[in-house]
Image 1 (spheres, rainbow, N blue to C red):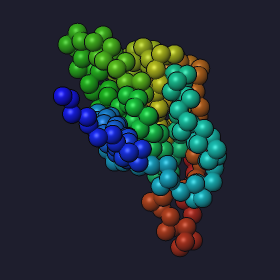
Image 2 (cartoon, rainbow, N blue to C red):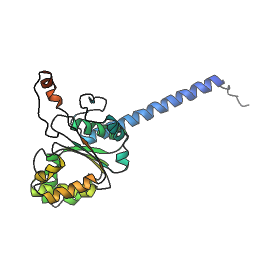
Image 3 (cartoon, helix red, strand yellow):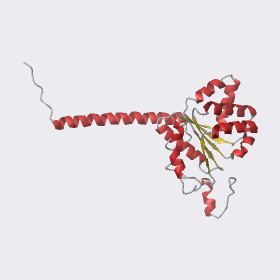
Image 4 (tube, helix red, strand yellow):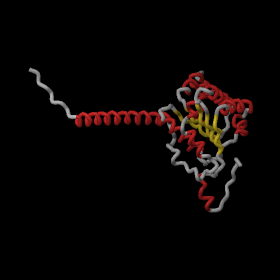
Length: 234
């Protein structure tokens, strides 16, 4: 004689279904958060800066709508580049990192490096016959952020290595760059106007340039005190 199991009430079934759904969504959110955190750590951002923290009222030369459009990450899906130009302290690195964080949050691979470290690693790889591998490794990142181009000039080897990197990523992945030098000054950075022109040609073919003409955040107080600061980008 079989024992008949008591039937669950509709209310119980609904409650159990909701409980299972909540557990599933909680686990899914936890996995997504863990994946984003792994992306953030892999990116090695020097600091974490967000778009919400950026003071667009202070830097009025920046079109906020352009930045918001970049934050949709269409430029990433189209393998386009972004370049932030302007004098020191105006928020170039902040915006580059903030876009990088949006990339990481979307589950897309991103990596941050400053130009000096990048060039040194490329030169070491070149001398060890490993430059090709280093260039392939750079393609692991859909977005590469190169900070402070122009902070120091390159030697011939460094200029050659950076050209190889930019060429490898051209129309395949996105690169975000920051520089305190106008494009007309890049020949001095590379110490070779031909290589500089070739690099710029590949960077700018599919790109958005944000030219920030404001004052340094670090010099805000000078404005209050009536001390004017020069702007080399006027």
